[in-house]
Image 1 (cartoon, rainbow, N blue to C red):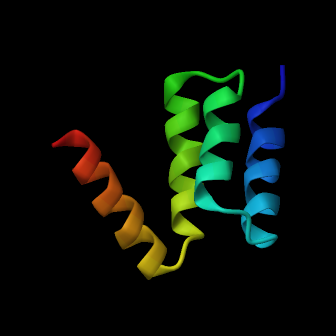
Image 2 (cartoon, rainbow, N blue to C red; image 1 turned 30 degrees about the horizontal axis):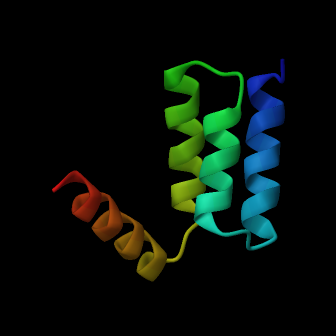
Length: 66
């Protein structure tokens, strides 16, 4: 099992390389971590996204929830 610090590094590296948010989200979802840890990693990835990407992802989530 990866430690949280290792997962944090993985997420930050993926963000730095410009990986698509969905790909990063998939890695987080597959991580052997608690729901709280996954939420924190997701927030970290979210913070690295450009505002236009944040809006698009939010709108996609709203559409999926409708």
